[in-house]
Length: 386
Image (cartoon, rainbow, N blue to C red; front, top):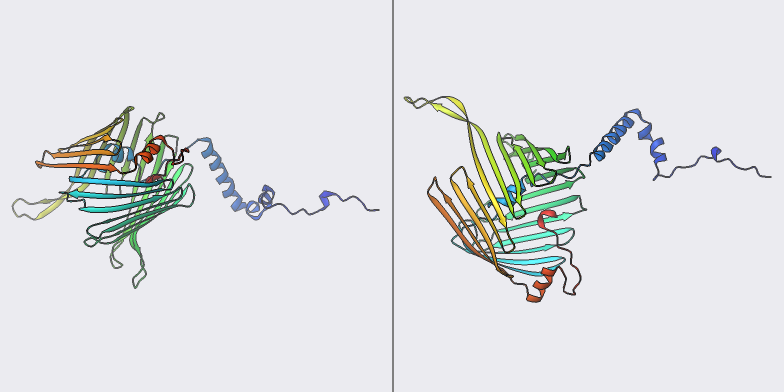
């Protein structure tokens, strides 16, 4: 007669997906590794209890001021006309033709094409001077994104930038390299390498570091520097403060405020410390150096209404600038921008037209958020969110 088998006398192999093996495994039984594992668990649980959020990327540290309020991303001179054609919305496919006259920065003609879906973003540009530029972003998942930027030009050096961006639950990690190369006899890295970390320490405050390493030639000495970053967002998210202490001694501080639902204001201050040589008034030879501090402050405002957007700014350097975008038709917008430099007695002026050449039926569907079949349409991803 067979005896009943006790479960205690049987060596049961634990499931690798359960915590039994982890608790009895090598890493947990080892006193050194178990100390680091327990420390990590304590820190991780403490971070979860703080209810921290992702602080955003270092590139967008002061985007509310530099990109949303100020004119630097929109200002142009001369006359230009943009013709945009959207062939599809999801995935997004769009082409654009740009014509310009009297501008020192814009080419006479440029063609660009864009394709974007949930994971991939591709954009290419070519102008009449045969200058080619392109950008590719690929999202491996919602947190991990690879980026490549290329630029080929006849009168300027070529540029290649490789970038890896990781967005954690409460931090942002970024690595980028500009024109990296090991193609030399000594196999020494040449180019620019930048690594940055932005970590939330409270739900409103984030602190970060940015490390930079550059070497122009294998025989030249390398340069390195550290920049310190800070960003604070109010609990109501109606004002944002950001600061940067750069490796070259420059201090950049900006403040953004949501004044009204349609009005935003921003201020940015730049301070640069340096050394100025002291020359003898008789001999004209340098006799020493003295520290100097140079700075500038810019104040700007943005007014956004249903059919128009107005931006204006004034700086301590004597520059007064404005930018106006007015939609006169569903497919036509008028652009106007101007700048006056009071100290240099110079002025700049720009006028533009922007056409959206989508068909009336397709445009109506886009405004209602529907596809061609009348089904709800999800908005295509924006370039900065890929």
